[in-house]
Image (cartoon, rainbow, N blue to C red; front, side, top):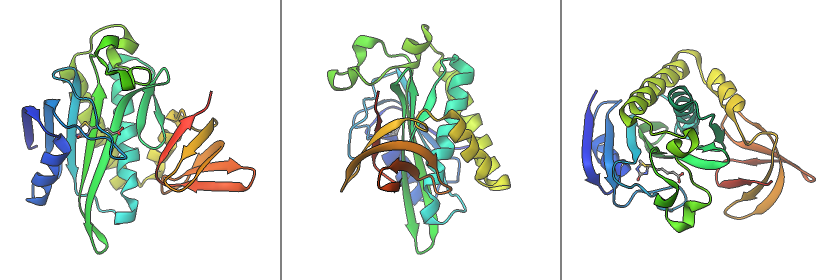
Length: 243
Ligand code: BTN
């Protein structure tokens, strides 16, 4: 596969989008030691210090309709969660839609970006940030209470190359499962690994805020929340799990 490695870069997602727009093959990856302006969801930044994490973007050209792009994120979360648990034994789970948590704190964020025209996807860039070897004091104050690293969770340093190799192998596995057997097996595994389902959650939507019980995720990856008014369906946004 095509691998683009950088010591430092603005954002691996930016580089991957340029490569994808220029026609790079599916499976091309961009990986960097440090991101100067790593990007998170909802216009947030992503803290990406030198040598302490895996800052990775993967280019896919999936045969899905543009509306199904959320499947890429869910599928990636399942693959990454498998790899992390296999390599570190840290016991991580998936928080809807695309975070991986360890002991209630975030270790992985996924930012999926898509280019589509008419009814076909041109490319999908799956951006993956894994906090691997940070120590408690490494995190900026704003995220110190909510973020953690695999090393902190596992109690030992994690070899990044071994983890990166495992992540890429599992991403290939989940992607070929989706292409050969459809999305159902991945959705089932997502539900099984979920730390969101069965919890009281608060939804911070763009136009609405409410609370309820997260009961299921539907075939499109939307979260279904039971409220006194009925079942609410949330396709995008943020949920927090209430203690
Ligand atoms: C989030 O949880 O808000 C998503 C964070 C995604 C971070 C990764 S790091 C590699 C890739 N490049 C970026 O600029 N962002 C993603």
